[in-house]
View 1 (cartoon, one colour):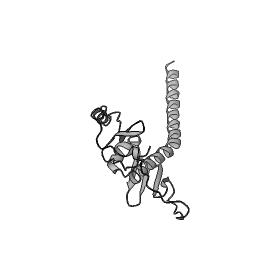
View 2 (spheres, one colour):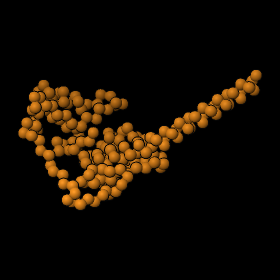
View 3 (cartoon, helix red, strand yellow):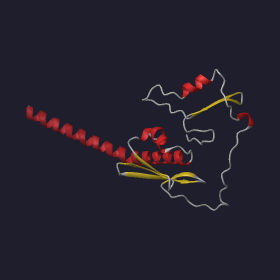
View 4 (cartoon, one colour):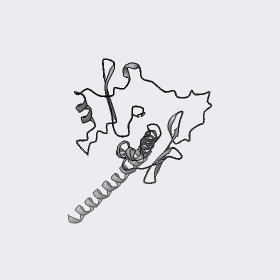
Length: 182
């Protein structure tokens, strides 16, 4: 009886191991390109559209992609993400079109697409310099990180009441003019 039990155990362990390896390969094949693409695009948009510093991008925007290697190239205005050198995606910044995955920016005819124009807020949404005494502690609390394992990573808060902006607050390195993705 003992040898049969041993054969069954070996077959079970072998089948389980093969199933786990096959599952991991499927995950890598399908999730690898998607994860690296998302990380490259997020890094590119954060660096070249929002103007965030690489350290801030790595600590906040790329936190969910900690298993990936992400490189931001300021000179070439690209962001490259890779997974164990198996999957690699690159996002390229184009001032007229934003960040594009896996294709160098296409130089467009200036007549084909209008230049981006600055968006100005209506007078009712012009910045408020000081929040009310009641709102100040609430805004400050929104930027606190009570649980280091589940960061809020609040960037900005704008409070509008009856169409009027009554308070605003910005996190580190964020200004009212900073374009935020997401």
